[in-house]
Length: 370
Image (cartoon, rainbow, N blue to C red):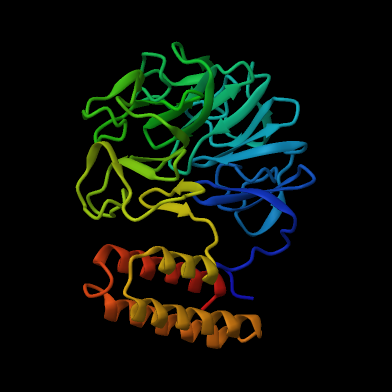
Protein backbone atom coordinates (compact mmCIF):
# COMPACT_ATOMS: atom_id res chain seq x y z
CA UNK A 1 0.00 0.00 0.00
CA UNK A 2 1.23 3.50 -0.86
CA UNK A 3 1.22 5.88 2.11
CA UNK A 4 2.13 9.54 2.51
CA UNK A 5 0.49 10.58 -0.77
CA UNK A 6 -1.55 13.67 -1.49
CA UNK A 7 -4.94 13.22 -3.14
CA UNK A 8 -7.06 15.64 -5.16
CA UNK A 9 -10.25 13.66 -4.63
CA UNK A 10 -11.93 12.16 -1.57
CA UNK A 11 -10.66 8.81 -0.33
CA UNK A 12 -12.10 6.74 2.49
CA UNK A 13 -10.21 6.69 5.77
CA UNK A 14 -9.24 3.16 6.72
CA UNK A 15 -10.92 1.38 9.67
CA UNK A 16 -13.25 4.31 10.51
CA UNK A 17 -16.93 3.35 10.75
CA UNK A 18 -19.92 4.99 12.43
CA UNK A 19 -18.19 8.37 12.72
CA UNK A 20 -20.44 11.15 14.02
CA UNK A 21 -17.92 14.03 13.90
CA UNK A 22 -14.49 14.80 12.46
CA UNK A 23 -11.85 17.40 13.23
CA UNK A 24 -8.67 18.57 11.48
CA UNK A 25 -5.72 20.13 13.28
CA UNK A 26 -2.60 21.60 11.73
CA UNK A 27 -1.36 18.22 10.45
CA UNK A 28 -3.47 15.73 12.38
CA UNK A 29 -7.04 14.47 12.09
CA UNK A 30 -9.54 12.94 14.49
CA UNK A 31 -12.84 11.12 14.17
CA UNK A 32 -15.44 10.77 16.93
CA UNK A 33 -17.33 7.49 16.73
CA UNK A 34 -20.87 6.76 17.84
CA UNK A 35 -19.59 4.86 20.88
CA UNK A 36 -17.84 7.98 22.25
CA UNK A 37 -14.32 6.87 21.37
CA UNK A 38 -11.94 9.02 19.31
CA UNK A 39 -9.44 7.89 16.69
CA UNK A 40 -6.55 9.98 15.40
CA UNK A 41 -3.95 9.92 12.64
CA UNK A 42 -1.33 12.17 11.04
CA UNK A 43 1.50 14.13 12.66
CA UNK A 44 2.26 13.39 16.29
CA UNK A 45 5.39 15.39 17.12
CA UNK A 46 3.91 16.76 20.35
CA UNK A 47 1.89 13.70 21.32
CA UNK A 48 -1.34 15.10 19.89
CA UNK A 49 -2.59 11.67 18.75
CA UNK A 50 -2.65 10.37 22.32
CA UNK A 51 -0.85 7.12 21.63
CA UNK A 52 1.44 7.63 24.63
CA UNK A 53 4.38 8.15 22.26
CA UNK A 54 5.42 10.69 19.63
CA UNK A 55 5.37 8.78 16.37
CA UNK A 56 3.26 9.94 13.45
CA UNK A 57 0.93 7.48 11.77
CA UNK A 58 -0.77 7.06 8.42
CA UNK A 59 -3.49 4.91 10.01
CA UNK A 60 -6.14 5.76 12.63
CA UNK A 61 -5.34 4.75 16.22
CA UNK A 62 -7.55 5.13 19.31
CA UNK A 63 -6.76 8.28 21.28
CA UNK A 64 -6.00 7.19 24.83
CA UNK A 65 -8.15 8.93 27.45
CA UNK A 66 -10.68 10.27 24.95
CA UNK A 67 -13.72 8.19 25.95
CA UNK A 68 -17.38 9.13 26.47
CA UNK A 69 -16.67 12.07 24.15
CA UNK A 70 -19.41 14.20 22.58
CA UNK A 71 -17.34 16.80 20.68
CA UNK A 72 -13.77 17.18 19.38
CA UNK A 73 -11.57 20.04 18.16
CA UNK A 74 -8.09 20.03 16.61
CA UNK A 75 -5.58 22.85 17.05
CA UNK A 76 -2.03 23.63 15.98
CA UNK A 77 -0.35 20.50 17.31
CA UNK A 78 -2.90 19.71 20.02
CA UNK A 79 -6.36 18.19 20.33
CA UNK A 80 -9.32 18.76 22.64
CA UNK A 81 -12.30 16.61 23.59
CA UNK A 82 -15.52 17.47 25.40
CA UNK A 83 -16.82 14.55 27.44
CA UNK A 84 -20.44 13.74 28.24
CA UNK A 85 -19.91 14.83 31.85
CA UNK A 86 -19.10 18.40 30.71
CA UNK A 87 -15.35 18.22 31.30
CA UNK A 88 -12.73 19.09 28.67
CA UNK A 89 -9.56 17.10 28.02
CA UNK A 90 -6.52 17.80 25.87
CA UNK A 91 -3.22 16.42 24.64
CA UNK A 92 -0.32 17.52 22.46
CA UNK A 93 1.56 20.82 22.29
CA UNK A 94 1.31 22.94 25.44
CA UNK A 95 4.10 25.52 25.31
CA UNK A 96 1.62 28.40 25.57
CA UNK A 97 -0.91 26.66 27.81
CA UNK A 98 -2.96 25.21 24.96
CA UNK A 99 -4.09 22.29 27.13
CA UNK A 100 -5.26 24.49 29.99
CA UNK A 101 -3.79 22.24 32.70
CA UNK A 102 -1.73 24.95 34.38
CA UNK A 103 1.58 23.83 32.86
CA UNK A 104 3.57 24.28 29.65
CA UNK A 105 4.44 20.57 29.38
CA UNK A 106 3.48 18.74 26.17
CA UNK A 107 1.25 15.74 26.85
CA UNK A 108 1.03 12.46 24.93
CA UNK A 109 -1.78 11.20 27.16
CA UNK A 110 -4.94 13.14 27.90
CA UNK A 111 -5.07 15.68 30.73
CA UNK A 112 -8.12 17.52 32.02
CA UNK A 113 -8.46 21.23 31.33
CA UNK A 114 -8.32 22.76 34.78
CA UNK A 115 -11.47 24.07 36.45
CA UNK A 116 -13.85 23.68 33.53
CA UNK A 117 -17.15 21.93 34.20
CA UNK A 118 -20.60 21.99 32.65
CA UNK A 119 -19.15 22.76 29.22
CA UNK A 120 -21.45 22.45 26.22
CA UNK A 121 -19.21 23.59 23.34
CA UNK A 122 -15.49 23.84 22.56
CA UNK A 123 -13.53 25.44 19.73
CA UNK A 124 -9.99 25.65 18.45
CA UNK A 125 -8.60 25.46 14.92
CA UNK A 126 -5.76 24.13 12.76
CA UNK A 127 -3.97 27.47 12.94
CA UNK A 128 -4.87 28.24 16.56
CA UNK A 129 -2.83 28.07 19.75
CA UNK A 130 -5.76 29.10 21.91
CA UNK A 131 -9.16 27.61 22.69
CA UNK A 132 -12.67 28.68 23.67
CA UNK A 133 -15.44 26.96 25.62
CA UNK A 134 -19.07 27.75 26.38
CA UNK A 135 -20.55 26.57 29.68
CA UNK A 136 -24.15 25.58 30.21
CA UNK A 137 -24.85 28.95 31.84
CA UNK A 138 -23.89 30.72 28.58
CA UNK A 139 -20.58 32.10 29.85
CA UNK A 140 -17.47 32.06 27.67
CA UNK A 141 -14.00 30.85 28.71
CA UNK A 142 -10.60 30.91 26.98
CA UNK A 143 -7.02 29.75 27.47
CA UNK A 144 -3.69 29.36 25.63
CA UNK A 145 -1.68 31.62 23.33
CA UNK A 146 -2.56 35.31 23.64
CA UNK A 147 0.00 37.32 21.65
CA UNK A 148 -2.72 39.24 19.78
CA UNK A 149 -5.21 39.47 22.63
CA UNK A 150 -7.26 36.57 21.25
CA UNK A 151 -8.09 35.35 24.76
CA UNK A 152 -10.18 38.50 25.21
CA UNK A 153 -9.26 39.31 28.81
CA UNK A 154 -7.66 42.68 28.02
CA UNK A 155 -4.07 41.37 28.10
CA UNK A 156 -1.55 39.69 25.82
CA UNK A 157 -0.50 37.23 28.53
CA UNK A 158 -0.73 33.54 27.72
CA UNK A 159 -3.25 31.80 29.93
CA UNK A 160 -2.32 28.35 31.24
CA UNK A 161 -5.79 27.78 32.69
CA UNK A 162 -9.20 28.99 31.48
CA UNK A 163 -10.29 32.55 32.21
CA UNK A 164 -13.81 33.86 31.85
CA UNK A 165 -14.36 36.47 29.15
CA UNK A 166 -16.26 39.33 30.72
CA UNK A 167 -19.12 41.19 29.10
CA UNK A 168 -20.45 38.21 27.16
CA UNK A 169 -23.39 36.01 28.11
CA UNK A 170 -25.99 33.82 26.40
CA UNK A 171 -23.31 32.48 24.06
CA UNK A 172 -24.39 30.09 21.31
CA UNK A 173 -21.36 29.30 19.12
CA UNK A 174 -17.61 29.98 18.94
CA UNK A 175 -14.69 29.80 16.50
CA UNK A 176 -10.98 30.58 16.47
CA UNK A 177 -8.55 31.82 13.84
CA UNK A 178 -4.79 32.12 14.12
CA UNK A 179 -4.90 35.27 16.19
CA UNK A 180 -8.58 36.10 16.54
CA UNK A 181 -11.70 34.71 18.18
CA UNK A 182 -15.35 34.88 17.12
CA UNK A 183 -18.47 34.29 19.20
CA UNK A 184 -22.17 34.19 18.39
CA UNK A 185 -24.75 35.24 20.95
CA UNK A 186 -28.25 33.79 21.19
CA UNK A 187 -29.65 37.08 19.88
CA UNK A 188 -27.86 36.57 16.52
CA UNK A 189 -25.16 39.18 17.06
CA UNK A 190 -21.48 38.41 16.35
CA UNK A 191 -18.57 39.42 18.54
CA UNK A 192 -14.86 39.23 17.74
CA UNK A 193 -11.49 40.10 19.29
CA UNK A 194 -7.75 39.66 18.85
CA UNK A 195 -5.72 40.31 15.71
CA UNK A 196 -7.37 42.53 13.11
CA UNK A 197 -4.60 43.19 10.58
CA UNK A 198 -6.79 42.01 7.70
CA UNK A 199 -10.12 43.21 9.08
CA UNK A 200 -11.02 39.76 10.39
CA UNK A 201 -12.91 41.24 13.36
CA UNK A 202 -15.45 42.83 11.00
CA UNK A 203 -15.75 46.16 12.82
CA UNK A 204 -14.72 48.32 9.86
CA UNK A 205 -11.17 48.84 11.16
CA UNK A 206 -7.82 47.03 11.18
CA UNK A 207 -7.20 47.74 14.86
CA UNK A 208 -6.57 44.80 17.20
CA UNK A 209 -9.00 44.39 20.10
CA UNK A 210 -8.10 42.88 23.46
CA UNK A 211 -11.75 42.71 24.51
CA UNK A 212 -14.75 41.39 22.54
CA UNK A 213 -16.23 43.93 20.12
CA UNK A 214 -19.56 43.56 18.36
CA UNK A 215 -19.63 43.41 14.57
CA UNK A 216 -21.71 46.58 14.08
CA UNK A 217 -25.17 46.68 12.51
CA UNK A 218 -25.08 42.97 11.75
CA UNK A 219 -27.45 40.32 13.07
CA UNK A 220 -29.60 37.34 12.24
CA UNK A 221 -26.59 35.02 12.36
CA UNK A 222 -26.96 31.34 13.26
CA UNK A 223 -23.45 29.92 12.64
CA UNK A 224 -19.86 31.22 12.73
CA UNK A 225 -16.51 29.86 11.58
CA UNK A 226 -13.01 31.31 11.30
CA UNK A 227 -10.10 30.69 8.96
CA UNK A 228 -6.53 31.73 9.48
CA UNK A 229 -7.28 35.45 9.08
CA UNK A 230 -10.86 35.58 7.85
CA UNK A 231 -14.34 35.00 9.27
CA UNK A 232 -17.43 33.45 7.67
CA UNK A 233 -20.99 33.35 9.05
CA UNK A 234 -24.36 31.97 7.99
CA UNK A 235 -27.56 33.90 8.52
CA UNK A 236 -30.97 32.45 9.31
CA UNK A 237 -32.10 33.23 5.75
CA UNK A 238 -29.41 30.93 4.33
CA UNK A 239 -27.15 33.69 3.03
CA UNK A 240 -23.43 33.57 3.81
CA UNK A 241 -21.29 36.57 4.74
CA UNK A 242 -17.54 36.96 5.19
CA UNK A 243 -14.80 39.45 6.08
CA UNK A 244 -11.05 39.62 6.58
CA UNK A 245 -8.15 38.41 4.41
CA UNK A 246 -8.92 37.91 0.72
CA UNK A 247 -5.89 39.17 -1.19
CA UNK A 248 -4.40 35.98 -2.58
CA UNK A 249 -6.98 33.23 -2.27
CA UNK A 250 -10.41 34.86 -2.66
CA UNK A 251 -11.60 33.14 0.52
CA UNK A 252 -14.38 35.69 1.06
CA UNK A 253 -16.19 34.53 -2.09
CA UNK A 254 -17.30 38.01 -3.16
CA UNK A 255 -15.74 37.81 -6.63
CA UNK A 256 -12.73 39.96 -5.70
CA UNK A 257 -9.33 39.72 -4.05
CA UNK A 258 -9.99 42.78 -1.89
CA UNK A 259 -9.66 42.45 1.89
CA UNK A 260 -12.81 43.45 3.77
CA UNK A 261 -13.04 44.87 7.28
CA UNK A 262 -16.85 44.75 7.23
CA UNK A 263 -19.17 41.89 6.22
CA UNK A 264 -19.76 41.23 2.51
CA UNK A 265 -22.18 38.69 1.12
CA UNK A 266 -20.75 35.58 -0.52
CA UNK A 267 -21.79 35.68 -4.17
CA UNK A 268 -24.28 33.19 -5.55
CA UNK A 269 -24.96 31.29 -2.32
CA UNK A 270 -28.41 30.94 -0.79
CA UNK A 271 -30.12 28.33 1.38
CA UNK A 272 -26.75 27.34 2.88
CA UNK A 273 -26.97 24.65 5.55
CA UNK A 274 -23.38 24.53 6.84
CA UNK A 275 -20.36 26.84 6.63
CA UNK A 276 -16.75 25.85 7.27
CA UNK A 277 -13.29 27.29 6.76
CA UNK A 278 -9.75 26.13 6.18
CA UNK A 279 -6.74 28.34 6.60
CA UNK A 280 -7.34 30.28 3.40
CA UNK A 281 -10.48 28.80 1.91
CA UNK A 282 -14.17 28.56 2.75
CA UNK A 283 -16.84 25.90 2.21
CA UNK A 284 -20.63 25.87 2.26
CA UNK A 285 -22.95 22.88 2.19
CA UNK A 286 -26.13 23.44 0.19
CA UNK A 287 -29.32 21.37 0.27
CA UNK A 288 -29.67 18.54 -2.21
CA UNK A 289 -31.25 19.75 -5.47
CA UNK A 290 -33.25 17.41 -7.69
CA UNK A 291 -34.21 17.47 -11.34
CA UNK A 292 -37.78 18.20 -10.22
CA UNK A 293 -36.58 21.26 -8.31
CA UNK A 294 -34.71 22.41 -11.40
CA UNK A 295 -37.89 22.03 -13.46
CA UNK A 296 -39.80 24.06 -10.88
CA UNK A 297 -37.23 26.83 -11.27
CA UNK A 298 -37.80 26.89 -15.03
CA UNK A 299 -41.57 27.00 -14.56
CA UNK A 300 -41.26 29.94 -12.15
CA UNK A 301 -39.47 32.06 -14.75
CA UNK A 302 -41.27 34.29 -17.24
CA UNK A 303 -40.15 32.45 -20.38
CA UNK A 304 -41.55 32.31 -23.87
CA UNK A 305 -43.58 29.09 -24.28
CA UNK A 306 -41.18 27.64 -26.85
CA UNK A 307 -38.15 28.21 -24.59
CA UNK A 308 -39.90 26.80 -21.55
CA UNK A 309 -41.03 23.73 -23.49
CA UNK A 310 -37.53 23.06 -24.84
CA UNK A 311 -35.91 23.33 -21.43
CA UNK A 312 -38.54 21.22 -19.66
CA UNK A 313 -38.28 18.56 -22.36
CA UNK A 314 -34.57 18.11 -21.60
CA UNK A 315 -35.29 17.82 -17.89
CA UNK A 316 -38.13 15.38 -18.48
CA UNK A 317 -35.80 13.17 -20.53
CA UNK A 318 -33.16 13.32 -17.79
CA UNK A 319 -35.71 12.33 -15.13
CA UNK A 320 -36.97 9.38 -17.22
CA UNK A 321 -33.41 8.16 -17.70
CA UNK A 322 -32.73 8.45 -13.99
CA UNK A 323 -35.96 6.62 -13.12
CA UNK A 324 -34.86 3.82 -15.47
CA UNK A 325 -31.52 3.55 -13.68
CA UNK A 326 -29.52 5.07 -16.53
CA UNK A 327 -27.51 7.69 -14.66
CA UNK A 328 -25.07 8.18 -17.54
CA UNK A 329 -27.87 9.15 -19.92
CA UNK A 330 -29.39 11.47 -17.31
CA UNK A 331 -26.04 13.21 -16.91
CA UNK A 332 -25.76 13.69 -20.65
CA UNK A 333 -29.27 15.12 -20.88
CA UNK A 334 -28.54 17.53 -18.06
CA UNK A 335 -25.48 18.63 -20.01
CA UNK A 336 -27.74 19.23 -23.03
CA UNK A 337 -30.07 21.23 -20.80
CA UNK A 338 -27.17 23.42 -19.65
CA UNK A 339 -26.18 24.02 -23.29
CA UNK A 340 -29.73 25.15 -24.08
CA UNK A 341 -29.68 27.52 -21.13
CA UNK A 342 -26.46 29.04 -22.48
CA UNK A 343 -28.05 29.43 -25.88
CA UNK A 344 -31.08 31.21 -24.37
CA UNK A 345 -28.94 33.46 -22.15
CA UNK A 346 -29.54 37.12 -22.99
CA UNK A 347 -32.42 36.17 -25.26
CA UNK A 348 -35.40 34.49 -23.65
CA UNK A 349 -33.48 34.09 -20.39
CA UNK A 350 -32.05 37.00 -18.43
CA UNK A 351 -28.34 36.60 -17.62
CA UNK A 352 -29.19 36.33 -13.90
CA UNK A 353 -31.78 33.57 -14.47
CA UNK A 354 -29.46 31.73 -16.84
CA UNK A 355 -26.65 31.82 -14.30
CA UNK A 356 -28.99 30.51 -11.60
CA UNK A 357 -30.06 27.62 -13.80
CA UNK A 358 -26.47 26.76 -14.76
CA UNK A 359 -25.30 26.82 -11.15
CA UNK A 360 -28.22 24.67 -10.03
CA UNK A 361 -27.74 22.23 -12.91
CA UNK A 362 -24.15 21.71 -11.89
CA UNK A 363 -25.27 20.99 -8.34
CA UNK A 364 -27.73 18.38 -9.63
CA UNK A 365 -24.99 16.82 -11.76
CA UNK A 366 -22.67 16.75 -8.75
CA UNK A 367 -25.36 15.09 -6.64
CA UNK A 368 -25.75 12.42 -9.32
CA UNK A 369 -22.00 11.88 -9.59
CA UNK A 370 -21.87 13.01 -13.22
